[in-house]
Image 1 (cartoon, rainbow, N blue to C red):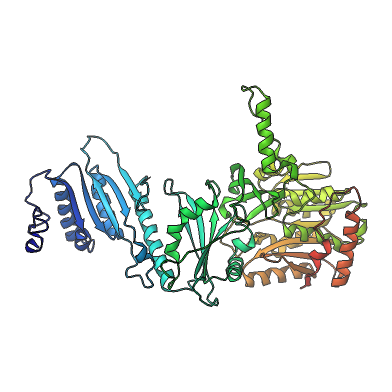
Image 2: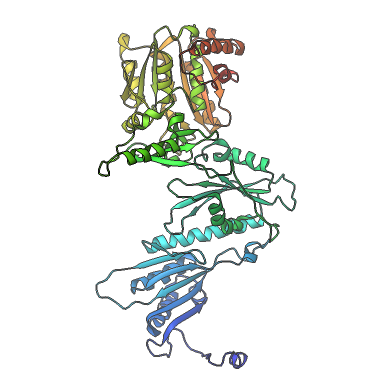
Length: 613
């Protein structure tokens, strides 16, 4: 080495020395550079090995000046990171870990030579402060990114592990397709909060050409819950129609700010190239696709935490037709819309902003802004959810549906949510009396304040467990009430179950007998079923059939939901033409002049695909 560098680097010395007993005086250097030595020495966690590493790191600390830095190039395996970070943080040094960025050529290699990322540990020596317990941990995951400060050594280790997993995933995606469903979050470099959710969708049947290797699809804000973007099957359909070998869909997170489509493209361009398929030309331009050319509008109106349902948000989003919709989202299942309502046209997002601005101009500066009445802006004649439309259409199974507006109609609705289902019945069936049961008192507040719901002498809300409420009614003997219609639209709080709606206890035989006992002989029990476990679904249908011999099923297109219509007497069975005829008769009554009705809602269309179990 001396001979090789004598001419080019005459100031450089090459010395043979024991790194655990270096001959240099204390505080001799500003920098100690370690290019893989720590990884080479720390091959295991045997006591002898750890003692040797302790002596090595102690010597590093001895020969460095205060303010000096130990730069260690490492693969950051878990035991190595733990040892290095633990040693120097106990000494009061600042610990920073940088991920070494790959070159563009390495990113686009058809066969990556190495799957694991390389890291640089930068340990800065501070002057010891007696009694101080200050520890500083930072991660810099991008070549020119701002370091993110982390609260503990454990969190730093977790962040490094995430980067390693990401690098492994990228290498696998470069080597082969057909990895199954692949999704990942890209986080904000400053806060560490998720900013984008990416889904990788491969279409192996697409014939390769120069221009169809790879594309990015930006989902407008608020539309990530739609079937086409939010479900695996929908994304596969989207990818097939787009005609690319690999399509990455990008969902934008609520709580994050996005300036424009151009800014999003600039932010994602370098990162998404790491997910490109093998065989893509190095200089290939990657197209960014979207719907409508903009990033959409999402306004979080309210967020809170329910003791039963957890964290939730109320948000207004712009739909495909430029109309605005209000949604209730449980953050434990952030891609599922729990409740939804359409806003009236004159209270669109821009109109709300303009009126707010005008009010500020007209009032003195010391007058405080009063909160708007958010629930008053709801279009109560419009049902957003397809399964709610199907449930309403099920009223056509009652006798003489064309007379339902003129006769008393008793309904029990279990599961309030935003209240749009019972509210629709209340407003369109003037003789109806509705009991709504909701276990979560927070949801009644949400429905009342944000979704235009209100109680009346014909509509009462009971804060109770639906199981207990119905059991108490069924135990009332001859005095128990009888309902013409019973509706279940209640979700399960247990995400591990194969059935998310209703909770399994709501379809147990003993409870279904209770439901049967409070249903009129010619009434209809309507149930929203969301079950991905086919065996469990067959069991549920068999259990329902045992209690309610007449059972119709209506599958909601593009969703997992199935609406079940249950009746007690098989002789009441209607053929499909008869069902459509009764639905048309009911709709004709509801469409009478002076009554608000959504022209796009055709009751008979909701029953065309109904099947008898």
